[in-house]
Length: 226
Image (cartoon, rainbow, N blue to C red; front, side, top):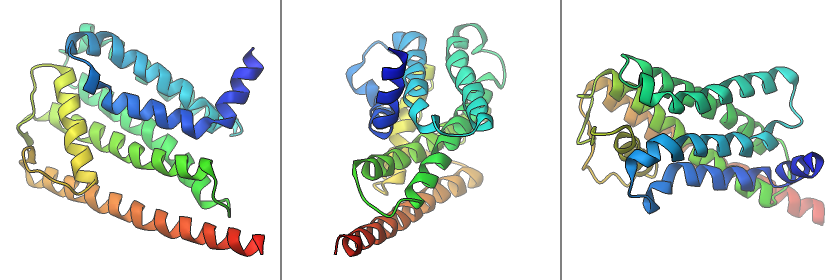
């Protein structure tokens, strides 16, 4: 049974991770009870994400697996601790920083995979999408860390609950990374403005480089086929 589980998580690792990332970012679309979301759905989502990331690290070294498992343990435990320690100064900032590290660690492995193969298949497409949503995740938790340090840094965030802050930042990060920019939520300090600007630049750079990688892989595959 365990062997079959590892086979599935390895074979469909990027597809599974992509679904888990989409659920983590946008499950609020179908939820109305935000208290339930914070207490139950958020920790469960992180557990699912942790399981979904197993396939990415199956053939990696022992040190990488230890780092991933350590970060995973923290990202599951920290949201469970919110009802008990959420009021403690800097707790939510620490939580956000750990999440940012966790998603960044996975993103590095995704980028390593995208650079190596000289072919295009469903894994490449799914991994590319994972990389984009991981950028959004990192943007969300970077901004969340800043917001919990000083809630005047970003305007028009609903700070009534941890869930509303998170969902507002998912929305803001998504429209920033995609360069839509409605302007209803705005950075309010120079440092935050520059960070948001950097988010936009990094996402566009990722898109441009990714298009170049995909084109080169397609050309290489066509040449091999001939």
